[in-house]
Length: 113
Image (tube, rainbow, N blue to C red):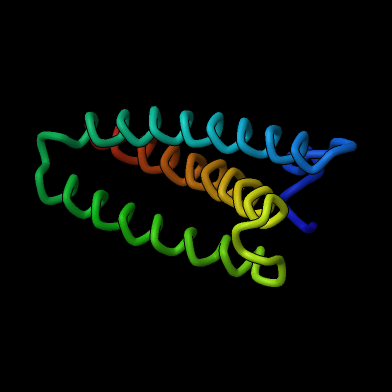
């Protein structure tokens, strides 16, 4: 599996252990994303046009990663624990990357306030 780096990959002697790890990493990265996204939206809440643009961009991004991560796990039978594990690991990496982008947007917005 070729993800961003070794810390993103769950290693365990059982598939259920790997899934549990991937699920935790996914929820952790999504939680950080949700916090950062809320921070960004609160920062630009006075500018409705910018807020709407960010929301639309985020909706598009979420659709994109859903497809990208299904493609990542494409050759594994959907509905299996292996598919779900690979998909969660992929989503975790995608959310981490998106947090970096949101951090840059926050910094940009703050520089103009």
